[in-house]
Image (cartoon, rainbow, N blue to C red):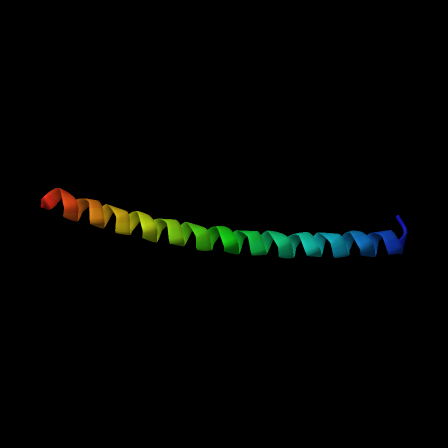
Length: 51
């Protein structure tokens, strides 16, 4: 494998690593938001069931 092709592969792998890290951050943020919405909904549901 030529050095040029190797360098290109390294660059692509690094780009993929960055993309994956961004996607993981997005998923983590989404999960936090969903957990918060779920918590609020359960609190609201619990409040309504007591009245």
